[in-house]
Length: 154
Image (cartoon, rainbow, N blue to C red; front, side, top):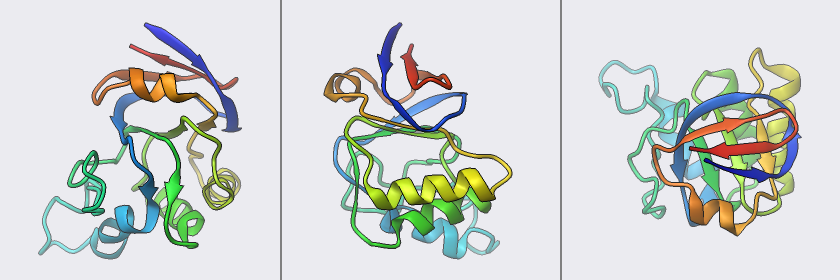
C-alpha cells in the first residue's frame, strides 16, 4: 500500500476501484452519451454504466466510469465541464471520486462544489496528488480516500 497526500477540494471518504487516465479528461466528451441517452432501453447497458465516450482518450474510451476512483492529471475541453460533473452526480452517473495529480481547474472545481452543495451524495475530489500518484496507480487498484485528502492505493 502506498499513500499520497493531496488537497481536498470536496472533502469526503470513499473506497473504489481505480480508473486511470494519463491524458487530459474531456468532461463533455466523456459523459455526453451517458447523460443524453442513459435511460433509453434501445441503447442497452452501455450508457447506464456511464462508459467513457471520448474516443480521443485511449486510456478510458468505452470503459465504465460509474462508481470508479477516476485518477487523472487534469480536465480539458469544454467550458461546460463543471455543469457536466454536477449533472452526472445528480443523475447518479458519476465516478465515486475524482483524483487529480495536478491542480484542479476552475471549471471542474465549480462542478465539484455545486455537487457538494446541491446533491444528495457529494463526490470526494482531491487534487495536487503529484505525478508519482499517477505513475503508481493502475486500473483496478483499490483506492481509499480520506477526508483530509490522503489517498491510499492498494
